[in-house]
Image (cartoon, rainbow, N blue to C red):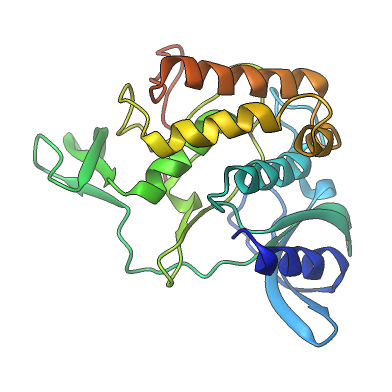
Length: 267
């Protein structure tokens, strides 16, 4: 969601009055469903207070909200608008991430299991999955340009948790990705369901975006300055190296083989 409309939404999220309406109880961290209102305009949103973050062994405590905002800033820099408008602000339970609520289209199939040995036309194979007992099926994801853009974004931000439930196809046909708390680590942490393009040549549009990001991330640029408010200098340097590596190889990354490539649970 890029452009004037997104800036208005960001203003609403940042300055509006937050009212907690409920909680997503199955989430590992505190996720509160809220409404936000400003000057007669109201929208639904998600509020994740820093105080509700569970400690992780490999990420500094109290940094997940900042990483979610950094993922939004990177998404906006690509021009693809793959992350809903996201801000860092104070709320009823302290500072936290506030993100526009996206109502997903339940009929938009992005993932599937098939008993075929190969992915059908329009689908990309991820790998075998247990479906009960000793039975396995082939896990596939849709071969769609917007999904491929998200795979590129995940490689750039080093997303360690791209589950199926973090893919939100909107009724208007747009695709959004959410839950970007475990991103921007200095070490390779990429874990995703979107391995269908692994090793393939990047599409031309991705090359253009990566070239633009390379310039946008130079020290002293507005994007680099903004990210410095959310990430460490080492994390920004690692981000620059990932962009440079993708530009050099011109290909989607492949699993390293050093740890499980798919997050658990996958959905």
